[in-house]
Image 1 (spheres, one colour):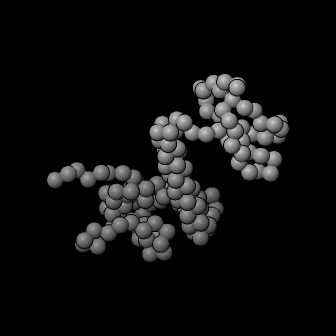
Image 2 (cartoon, one colour):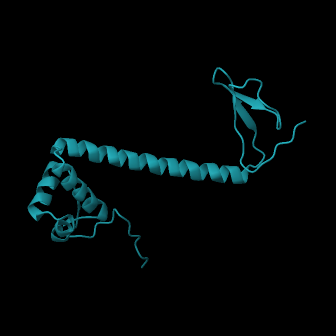
Image 3 (cartoon, rainbow, N blue to C red):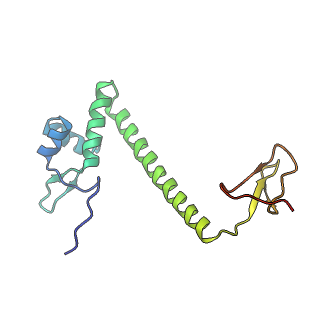
Length: 146
């Protein structure tokens, strides 16, 4: 049997363990589950299992609550943090795809942004005609003038 991959979203902790890690009462975790603030996964026996991500969110809730935010405000902060994390993952994936494309297609073309914002193809080694234009370049490559 293959070892399952464990990450920060893997449900591992029963409610008592998660409550201890988050320094909260188990009843508080039950309340947060009821209102949908932190919803742990469930086992086949319907018991709660919290992940490291859930515990981190519980700690964030405690901190934000101590700073005076309402539960609805905390819900919104958590949603925004999740959205930022998703966008960071997407940027990382795009950067990886771009790096692979650069490795597979070293003959790519050179472009500049025209004054109206349109992309303009340039011959290698040529400069843009206006100082306000921006040329895209590849670090470490020397372009020879023709």
